[in-house]
Amino acid sequence: MLTGSATKAAEMLGVSQSAVSQKLKIFESDCGLELFRRERGRLEATENAHILMLEVEKHFRGMELIEHKVKSLKNRIDTTIHLAAHPVFGQQVIPKVIAGFVQSSVTKVKFSINGSRDIYESVDSGEFDFGLVANEIYGNSCVFYSFCTVRGVLITPKNMLNIAKKSKSLSDMAGHNFVALNSEDTTRIALEKECRLKKINLNMVVETPYCHTVLELVKSGAGMGIVHPLTLAGIGSDVIDAFDIRENIYFGSNLIFRKDKTLKESAKELIKNLRIQTARELKDVAREHGIDIKAKQFDI
Image (cartoon, rainbow, N blue to C red; front, side):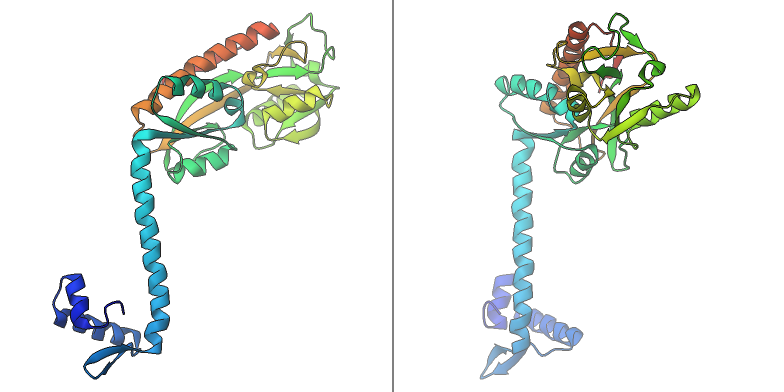
């Protein structure tokens, strides 16, 4: 179709003219279509050939796009880190880490804040090098490392509970409106288990998937809630009251990357800085709100 003859097509492909003619006959036989007619010593394309060529061109354009994407990915490998995190880490901690990282590195960073399921799918597809997700997310194609496990913090509007006692139990929460995380959240599941064991009913008036939304609802007076301590990074003790929880209500976060992918040294350096900043932020939150944060971080 492009050259107008079997001979020129053979030259383009680097094969013999007879090989082209034979392949063409086999293809026409397999399709059950006449694609070319020989007219005055030349091959003339039939209407079927022209229609088919439109689809063939789409195919080759698609192949060109794939080649372009491969080149783009090759260029990305050494110059850019792609990462995503769920909001607990993405709102405050990671932006600070990235700001310090780019000042001392030639590596560029692409960063997104997404829900944990979306992050898993992006890492799984190769769009991102690694991600931080809540521990209710799992899958077979990625490596999961426990990054940080920390006991939850009870937050309330100012002066809702007696602030003289900085440690509260589930019984202290009963009788008040409660802002809960979604039912599939592992922290919510652990909370409900403790409530069943102690025969306590919490008045869950609102459900939401994110700790930062719990914080905003509590600040607005909707009720009290349990959040990850990092949710309080940058939030002063004059805004809300925070309390330790006696029960074992923990938040877990996992670092994930594809099993067939090795983390770049620059990515490892960024993760190291993230661990350091996480510990620093937890310490600052504990000091600001006068609470005892129980946390465990893991080497990656």
